[in-house]
Image (tube, rainbow, N blue to C red; front, top):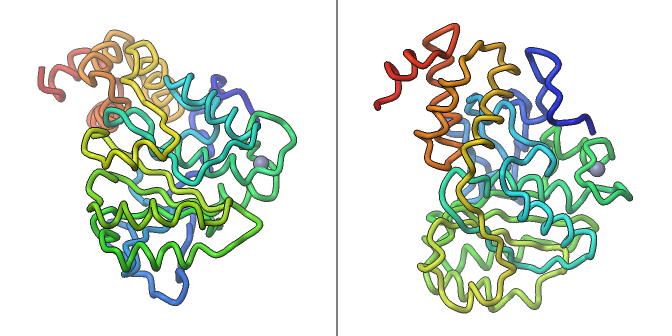
Amino acid sequence: MPDSGAISSSRIPSCWDEEQPLLLGHIGKTPVIEHKTGWKHNNEGVTPYLDSLNSLGKKFRPKSFKEFVGQNVVARSLLTAISNRRITSLFLFHGPRGTGKTSASRIFDAALNCLSFYIDKPCGLCQECLLFFSGRNRNVKEVDSVRINRKERIKSLIKNAEISSRFKVYIIDECHLLKGESWATILNNLEELSQRVVFIAITLELDKLPHNAVSKSQKYQYTKLKEIDIISRSGKLCVAEGVDFDLDALNFVATKSKGSLRDAEMMLDQLSLVGKKITISLVYEVVSV
Ligand SMILES: [Zn+2]
């Protein structure tokens, strides 16, 4: 893997390029409905691993734990879990918004099926990684908590998680929105699931989850990012996108984002659209002080 810190051109080719034809077609026998936003789901509330919004953060989404910003403890722990084969059926990623929970889920998915013998996964080079990063991997699904929020739908999801030689991963975003009966269905079936079926439940609000969901999961806490990490990432994004910037402007963006990398990336997106150079005066003008 190339060093993530080395940005040598103004346009980094991204495996996450939203123009890639990711996971189209059908899931099981249920037709996939395409939304104007580019998000797709079927009537089980399952969203293929896809989004089509072309923001800076998504365009240069991290593809390895090395590129993953500001959550070193989590990254190390997840890699260790994979290398020690301590993969449970339910992972719980919790912490403030914009701290990398969904990005980590995706990297983790890729790492689980990576064929490399090295600890540093995903390698980005093996057959599974190439499949994953080209968007043709059908073993990862994002699940809409609201749409899936019925016992029958959860059961159908579990039933469709057929035994495979590869890991099948379901990412349940905003899992605090799941009803008690939905959680009960997941938890009651955990032990019968194939060891290669993994649920990653993501939430901002750990205290809203049923106690047994918390106790039966392998938990990873995401913390607010340090300003220095947000500044570093912002600088790399600007260089990659060919946008000139003043450092004090990025410092201010980092302060305003209050530990949320996503907020910082959204501000940069906006700023990069209105000026050729991101200066402190532009930031004052665009971002409310
Ligand atoms: Zn690989």
